[in-house]
Image (cartoon, rainbow, N blue to C red; front, side, top):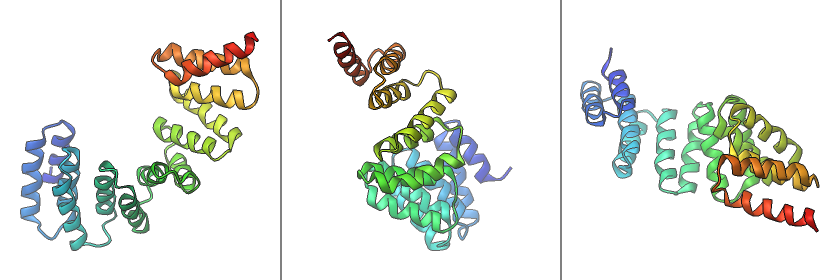
Length: 219
């Protein structure tokens, strides 16, 4: 097995020093090959060493400016530091270089969400949701974005889908409660808020909403 594969395995097993050693050897053996730098960059990002990670991704891009995963990695470096505009630029580059995976579309959507551009986020989260129908986080964020864009029926559908994937998803129950309130179905809303609290007794938003609905129903 080659050193890059071994390094990735070590990284997945949290043996970071061993992974770094293998990636270094791979780079020394093939200094003109961007993949070694990309893997090392991913490792450094994982270890929150963003400054060095950035240098490795940039080196990979110098060697091959069409290396889509290098732009994706660089985007993650900026995203982790909450530099969302910079992250966005890199994720767009990754997509333009042919990376059409759920993760890159999801991260791109999330950069817009963090900047409160919910309309701009929607097409990217939709694409991510299409590519990863079984990913709970992606489906949930897509559902949330639909709701924020006023597409309530679609949001309800997607949130129900989230519960199919993970029945104990307290935030999905909370959001379905909000949808039910929007549709003036107070009893149904109460059921969802109660379920959210049953799953997560610390769910402040659900507790607050449940209290308000109960008060309204008692009046």
